[in-house]
Image (cartoon, helix red, strand yellow):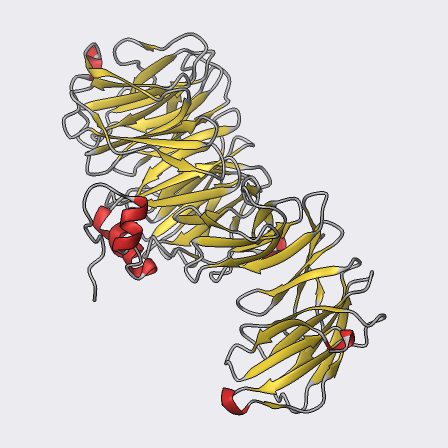
Amino acid sequence: MDALTAVESLAFSPDGRTLAVGWRAGLVGLWDVTRPAAARPVGEPLNLKCPGVFSRRIAFSPAEPTLAAACGDDTGTIGLWDLTDPARPDRGRTVEAGSDVYALAFSPDGRSLAAGARDSAVHLWEGADTDRPTRLGKPLKGPTQPFMSVAFSPDGSTLAAGSADHSIRLWNVTHPKTITLLGRPLTGPGSAVTDVVFSPDSRTLAAGNTDGNVDLWSLPPTRIPGAGGNVASVAFSPDGRTLAAANQNATVSLWNTADPNNPVPRGEPLAGRKEPVNAVAFSPDGRTLAAGDGGGKVTLWNTADPGRPVRLSEPLTGADGLILAVAFSPDGDTLAAAGGGLGGRIALWDVSDPAHPVPASGVSGSGGKSVLSLAFSPDGSVLAAGGDGSNGTVGLWSTEQPGARIGKKIDQPTATSTWVAFSPDGRSLATGNSRGVVTLWDSTDPHHLKKRRGKPLIVPGGSLWSVEFSPDGKTLAAGGHTDNGTIHLWNVTDPDRPTPIGQPLTVETGFVAVLAFSPDSRTLAATTDDGVATLWDLDVESSINRICAASSGALGEEEWERYVVQPPYDPPCEKS
């Protein structure tokens, strides 16, 4: 066979009726494979008109009759064709990556095209399904070696690129104009990554390596990419159908979580201010969303229709510093906000009419430089505040006599920050500090918090950044970090005898910053410092059913004996 006729790449059209064959000579042949046993060529081969004769990769759009084919030249020439009628292909415009292209991939909607190149970058174009494709931002830079493979996840939220340096990088492409890196690069035992592909549910990534092996990566159960920068805070609406995420690019993202395993964006992120958003909270009736920012202001949004939020009034002021925590009282009439205000000031507003909020008497100084956490007791009579290392205490404040302290300060170790949470029945207060110690207090009488419930709960070798009770009161979650983000769960049905629940959950995308349970207690959301929020399904039966459905009951007796050994074979998935 002549070297110029060697096949370099193959691709099926989305409907499976056409096979494209890329030859080294810079030609792409189209074959009608409607009847595979009688496949026939369709028209003349497409001529890439490459500057040289070496062609590289081809790719079909999964949504449109568009074919992309790359040359092997130094300018990275990529030709686009409209194959609505494969017998009469219509050549569109040509784009250039500026460097030799090694890989091509279309987004699931066919609107974006990604090209992995020798210049250690992924180049993107939007409008790839039109005759006017345009560059989409700056190239995504990665390692010092070329990107050999690229792939979009089927849900369209993630772009993966495998490199010759053995690593895989992931980007959040939910909002193509604000693409952000997702966590740290994935690195395995393999060699240069030559190909990457996602599973249909977007939860597993396979990577082929030059050493002949394939690495499988289990991605976090459900990831919600932020709109830009770190995701600083998350909050579920009271009906559990919406999740709000505070982004460091000064926006708030809303996600439809009616199906927590498949969250869907609710429109574009809310943009109200220019400062990073650090905290979000829904009112108890779910009709108002509060977002506190780095400029010391709180923006209120009407979320009665979460698909069409409307900003209410002018941003609230009075916290005297960046906002790190916001909380609504259980009756929804009071909003508290605090952060880096002078002396740890806590600002309060009467929001019984959210369209016309009125400042109320707050706490002029909680004793430290900043307040990191706020929590109302279930009856709304007490506001707990956890502070930074300059404070070293947890304070309880009366909402019936604004500014009045309740009981004594709860001392914490020197130079530690503290986070707080009340149990749903109000009988326990959890305090978690940055040394990794969680203490449960009997808060039946908040004026006399002397009795500790059980022994302190310890997170080995790590610190805590968040504590949260599940709405059913059965579970306490604590999030923090060691080498990776970790989430520890305890059964606190009997708060005097808490017991660990399984192994800690780990989050590969970064350190855990904030936790939030869904109203039914079945889903746990965790934010990280790498621009991702992860949703964990805590319903055991639901998890088993999902795993069995995804694996088609693949753990047979042979695999059981190889990987499980003991106990005797007990198929985890019922055969249908």
